[in-house]
Amino acid sequence: MKKFVKPFDLLFVFFSLCVVLLSIVFAVEKDKGQKLLVVESPKGKYVFSLEKNGLYEIEGAIGKTIVGIEDGKVYVVESCCPNGTCVSAGKIEKSGQWIACLPNKVVIRLEGSKDEEVDVLAR
Image 1 (spheres, rainbow, N blue to C red):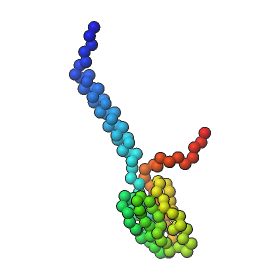
Image 2 (image 1 turned 90 degrees about the vertical axis):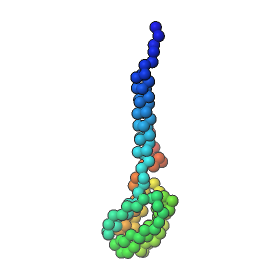
Image 3 (image 1 turned 180 degrees about the vertical axis):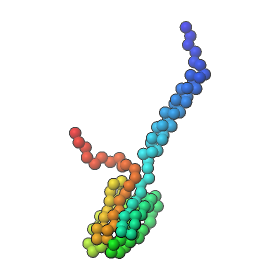
Image 4 (image 1 turned 45 degrees about the horizontal axis):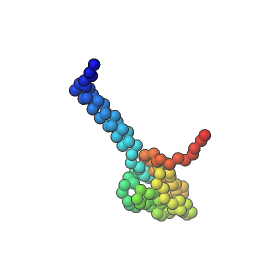
């Protein structure tokens, strides 16, 4: 007994493969979200893209805090606070990291796509 492949069978297989491939592509693209810099101060909330390098002046409770973005990394360039802990905090680049200038009441944090690094492994 010979079995023949019907044209609709081939069409069904082709469309099924297309659906599977498109599902994979959309799932991968969804995980590649854009990281955003979110800065909160007494004067308001500011959101910046990490795609564009630049310096931004944020008005805080006691003066200005200058935040820099360079190659997807965020850091405090200068702040009016007396101890400068926020300036010495260094650069942040992963979602969930933050820098705070407590005397000036400025909080800087990164939001967006999940990073692939493992923090803790429990067994």
